[in-house]
Figure (tube, rainbow, N blue to C red):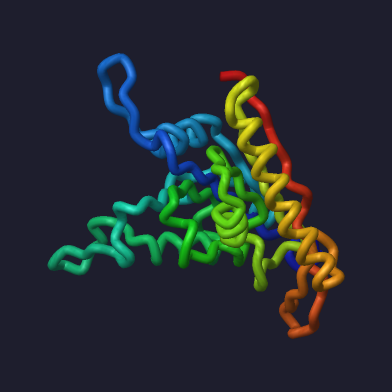
Length: 212
């Protein structure tokens, strides 16, 4: 990373669109809320001005398709429920450190200002959908030299097969662009803060396997 942002805490995005709500042992659960609570229970900390700071519940936010675009207010002007746009803005400004989202973040919501990592918990066969999702953080204006795309896969499951086919398709698309534009598979041109063009490289995609 650049020395100018070496003391800035970056943002991380978790994407999952399937299995958000499920029943287990006769009870209903929301996976997003469970993930958020799990992260809070781990008592993660980070450094701010040389001081250790505990990750707070307000620094973990959720965006779903059921949310309105803007905040809902009561008659007194107090926020009843957050809207997608205000959550997005808080994430891009660094107030929210971890964002958990469904397909609602795939289009029209740019999360690239401070984000450095995207964890995809379920992938599909469509390379256009995958590239669109990756583009939420991998785009012009990102403050980091590299971003990381992580596909989380279930070991000995259909996940690995889907990921393999998806990467084949994406690499084919990039190779065609490479031949046409004479660029590296993962390079494009972007602009830094002083307006000068610089290369922007996407770190190689990673696959993390876990036992179901």
